[in-house]
Image (cartoon, rainbow, N blue to C red; front, side, top):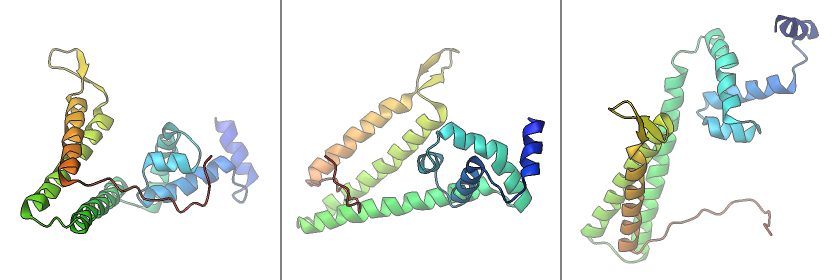
Length: 181
C-alpha cells in the first residue's frame, strides 16, 4: 500500500487518475446533499464504493478544509428537499381537488390526512433502511422488522384516501427526447 502511495506522489499532483477524480467530484456532490445512491448512479459505482470513499478520503478532506458538522448539514439539505417534495405533492393534490370542483372542508382534511400518512411512510422507510428487514427481538432472536407491515398498511390507507378523493398520481414526464421501444 505504501508503495502505491509513493508511486502516486512521484507522478505529481497534475496527474490525477480517473478513480481519484471520481471521488473528488463525488465529494462535491456529497457536500451539496446528494444521497449516496444518487452519487453511486451518477459515477457508475456501487453504494458501498461511495461509502468507502467517505471513510477513506472524504473524512480527511473534511478535516483539511476545517468543515464542521458536514453530516448534519447534508442531513439538513436532504430534509429541505423532502419538505419541498412534500409541499409539491400537497399542492398538486389541492390543485386536482380544485380542478374536480371539490372544495369541501372534509376533502381538504383528507388531503392533510394523506400528507400525514406520507410523513409516516417516509419514517418507516428510513427505519427499514437503518435497521434492516430483520431486527433483534426482546428474546434475543432475529424477527421481522414491524415497520415493513406498518409500511404496507400505510400505503394501503394512502391509496384509499386517493380513491376517496377520486385523485390520480401524477407522473412527471422526463425532458428526455429518447424514445423507448
